[in-house]
Amino acid sequence: MALLELRNISMEFPGVKALDGVSLELNEGEIHALVGENGAGKSTLIKILGGLIPAGMYAGAVMIDEQEVRFHSVRDSERAQVRIIHQELSLVNEMTVAENIFLGNEPRRLGVIDYTAMNAQAGRALALLSSDIRPGELVSELTIGAQQIVEIAKALSRKARIIVLDEPTAALPERDVENLLGLVRDLKKRGLGIIYISHRLDEVRSIADTVTVLRNGKRISRFTRGNLDLRSMVRDMIGRSLENAFPPFARAASDQLLTLRAVTLYHPHHRRQKVLSEVSLSCCKGEVVGVAGLLGSGRTALLSLLFGVYRGSHTGELRFEGKTYIPRSPADAIGRGIALVSEDRKRFGLVGAADIKENLSLASLARFCRHRIINLDAVAAACNRYVESLQIKTPSLQSPVMNLSGGNQQKVVLGRFLMTAPRLLLLDDPTRGIDVGAKYEIYRLIHSLSAQGMGIIFISSELPEVLGVAHRIYVLQGGRVREEFKHGEKSEEETLAVAAGISAA
Ligand SMILES: Nc1ncnc2c1ncn2[C@@H]1O[C@H](COP(=O)(O)OP(=O)(O)OP(=O)(O)O)[C@@H](O)[C@H]1O
Ligand SMILES: [Mg+2]
Image (cartoon, rainbow, N blue to C red; front, side, top):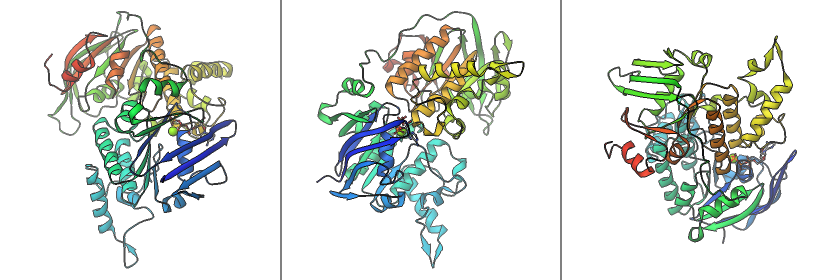
């Protein structure tokens, strides 16, 4: 008997058929992955199961233990022991971690909330996730990765039979990904039914028992562990075969754009601790430079320094466009033509109520101004170009950005920075949460920007991406450059060995 059955679900938004007769079955102790392009309908399906989209708004039936259930609110679905961790986190920023975990479910003594018990229980739930987040911390102080962990602790601290994770690893630091996957396997062992949404197909392959592929709101295919073939899965997701993961590209030019000579970066709080030691590197005009390294290798600190947001001090020499460059603030960096697309884009990136055109052009309106008049046609034309090249799935430029699917919102933020036409673009994990087909388009875009002379420094939590896209790669380990090589000269295994400090260069 199936634990959960979604039967022939259809759902329409104005101008968009988000789901078209989708069916799915989930059993106890099963991990069922849901994959598909950005905008395929995955989150919509989950919102129906979670009561965010109430019964009456969709066609078809949700069955639990072969009984139809009709959820009108999140509370209804929680009562049926369904727990959902949504793609857009839904914690209350002004509350503590413990208050969030127990929101609406607080342990009480004599009628009042028992904070001591609450903090202790929250501490235990977090420890289960091997996290050192303190229950008393305010959620607003946490990184996105930490907030994700709190969401998971919240879901786990209540009784559940069905758990849904909508892209749980998209904002999770790498070191927590394995941890999370282990946890999901544990839940499976305990007999829970799990729906797992991710764009990282390696994750899907490693944990899924069953995979359902959606495209344009329709169920295209279903794979089981035994017949799981990534190539066919990708074909079904994007509607065409992807022969190569990365597009070919031309060689870079050799005009120096940015050089670092013996740059040492000190920890903002522990002044003697070096985050980077004696780092020398360069990026030419028209060159894509990849920086590979594990978490804690200094990758992110490097980009923060270049963008003027690093809090600690540094020594050594930086030059940008032939002049000494002392990064002071993001405004300073932007003024010089340096842009950063970072992992915080989810939090700071978008103006939800504004439309796509406004969000895209926000940072580059000055470029479209002559004599204080904005050339609106030119703005619209530029926006249309980016909607096309990034494959942003939307009925029009006038749709509010909050109506877009998660991955498409992310493309809008990326597009916004690209539109500022920087001379040096710093990319920190630009394809997280983006589907495989659109990733390919983003790589193509990166190459076409570099071909126009832009210098690009690229870091990613996915090593194959760095190796596949960059002209030249530096490997950081323990804050030092351990290796530098050209595209194609080193394999993933060799690079990993250097990044992990196993093999000396
Ligand atoms: N509130 C809304 N109003 C209008 N359209 C919406 C709304 N929510 C979703 N859509 C549209 O429904 C379609 C499916 O979106 P959904 O969020 O389910 O995609 P997804 O598969 O989760 O994508 P992603 O991988 O990017 O998260 C998209 O075309 C999206 O723009
Ligand atoms: Mg989604």
